[in-house]
Length: 330
Image (cartoon, rainbow, N blue to C red; front, side, top):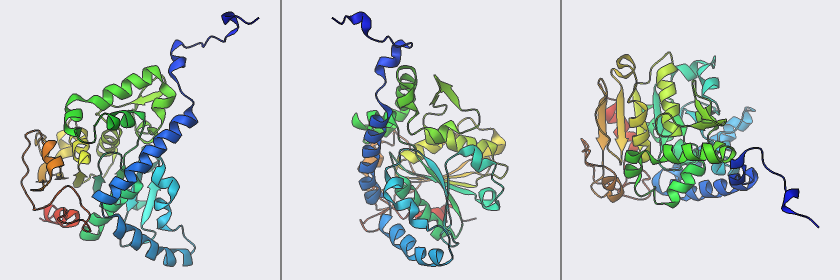
């Protein structure tokens, strides 16, 4: 007859909180996949998809990797973040980096020459992030670095609690950092899912081997590291929705020489203009109830007749490319 004494006792008492990692990762992938629907609403996904597929023919003929690889199923559901170096005017159009350290140490000129970076909103996949960066690249005729937000268990929890509708409040309370910190203590393996990119930043902070956030979110940590460690500086940062808040968090503790002359463009979520040397260009749609809900008293310089989307197929839309061009003018 078996007794309770026969049961294995975990060496770590918190081990009981860990779920099988494949199960957790599948669940996170499913949530990330759902957010692709939001990407199609808020970003010009149809144009990106069409233009990448058209460019496939020439790239395949030259024996290169087709740029449409970022719109396959695996890329759309992958919970891990990445850096997408996008140039709408030059093949192969998309370069993908899965490590900040690898990107910073790259010998290729294009990684040092890019001076524009973009961040999208809650849970966006490579598809939505690439679509926003593509708009800006077309308008400015320059390469753009898209920071694809990682999507982990902390994001699932906050989105389930309504964080998508109240991201201004969650940013104010720094709730994602608190949830992520709790997960690193109770379930570090689960907490590591979706955090590989932020874990690859120089000086990344970890607890029990799982990364924790230094500046409120993974995307903020990544952007801060890029702003701090790149030899060549960014001149323009553009964030849509929650991406604007992530930019605001990332630039807070930079030295003045790193922020002097930096231009920050926000779409659909104005942020506090409290960093010396930064030129702010903020756009909030007259019909953007979601953006106005999350403004927290921060007023934009521009009130275009638009709602929260940047997808021109769903007018009246934010003209992301045109607003970037206006903000980048001398």
